Amino acid sequence: MNSKSFRFFFKNIFAISVLFYGCIGDLYFDTHNEMNGDKVSRDVAVRQFYGALLVKRSLCPQSIDTTLTSAGYYTTNIGSGCSGSSTTDESKYTLRSCKSVYKYVHKKDLTVCLNEVLFFPCESVANASRVLRPNFPVCRGLFGPGPETPLSM
Image 1 (spheres, rainbow, N blue to C red):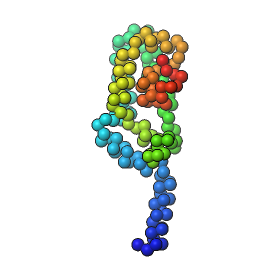
Image 2: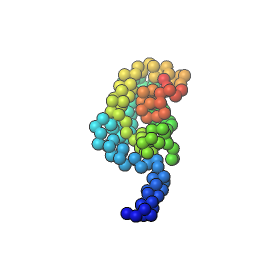
Image 3: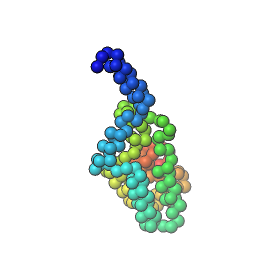
Image 4: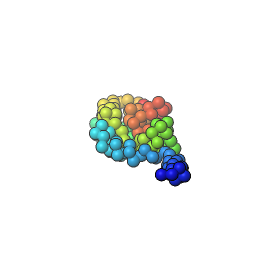
């Protein structure tokens, strides 16, 4: 390969990598996470969270059904952390899109989240609903911007 074609080749590679900077690593990391037995997709985790929430609703008094439903909403739907072409520190360093970074969650974190839902006292949910928008802080950290938000019970 002569020097002109060598430079041309690397200029093109550089231009392509700049265009797709935020998602070069998506294919690798998404495939790796899919095959990793320690992780589960966020969609599956959200479905399991809502399943645990239904079990919790059956165990608590009917008077707090609305509170539990809104807690589920505020836990999973407020502020995903990614919008459009946004990036995070982790996505910049791994050449991934922001959505790819948050596409999978660790199973052990999901287990802690589900235990939080199932073992959180019903009375605490009812008391918190008078003061704050209720949600489950550990699960909020898993599905949203983190438990340090002022939304926590």
